[in-house]
Image 1: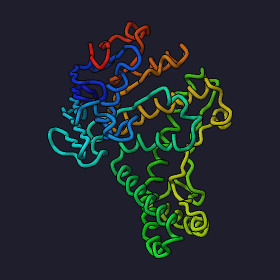
Image 2 (image 1 turned 60 degrees about the horizontal axis):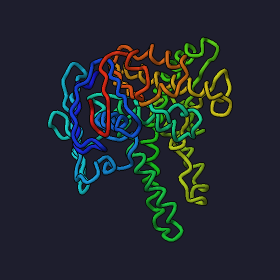
Image 3 (image 1 turned 45 degrees about the vertical axis):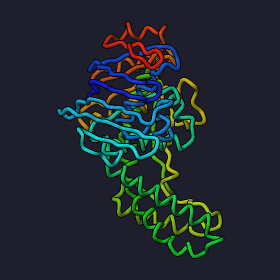
Image 4 (image 1 turned 180 degrees about the vertical axis):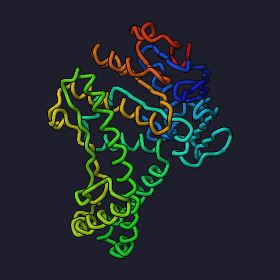
Length: 367
């Protein structure tokens, strides 16, 4: 799985750019605010239909432009693809694969996959549950189209229910529609729990191996999936999960009406990460936190390879400069076997260490 070439027009600070990539390693260096991360953002967007940074597509359109284009030539699953995104200020975007329109973002994940790692991810362990749910969702939406569809429907039902609970005091008639949205939350929520648990089990296996090796065998990492209390076995059949979610929702019915909040469901899920049996969020040192986050991201890459049969494209955005030499070596020893993009500053030694192709980015121009 690799990106052979990328074409950009009015994308962020790239007025126009065309670049051919190395199938193994691509080092992108330059000073800050020159466009290194913008290039990686385009690669992420073409694999997910979502930006890792922007809240709206319009934010990725260059200043003074009415539209932007990002197009990549991909080789994956023994086939060649051309993935194109056209973004507009005044109308909906247009996504195509080999000139065929794509309606859902999740469909892009059936072409190629990316694992994106940025400095903020080094603190994934210390952040709130929302960050770890986002980590799960980003990975699973690329891997499992059914999960992406169920998650989207769950979010829609959640938003409807939240509005009903918020406005019910002034409009009690809205409560008549509540059972319908509860049932949607139950059915789609069960699918979400099912896939999250399966992914977390694989994550637990691979992340433990990576963390053990990075720590020199001194520490044991464990990852546990946490969902609503009524779900006694998140690995159960989806029908069983739905019944247990229904029981949980019923037990919270009065509390939800009183608080006007949706209190029950997998929108509060989390990953409990422990190191040597202690909660990493509370007790891990800065070094342990970074090692655990590295282990999770590298585990994500291994899961993709096992499911798809190929390594995903690995994007490392100025991560190595944030790590000590031992952790740098740990990462560099594990990026072989698939295509990787690494951004760094001009004074880094990475271009010499890694080889492959080297690109210098200056004010939205690639040299």
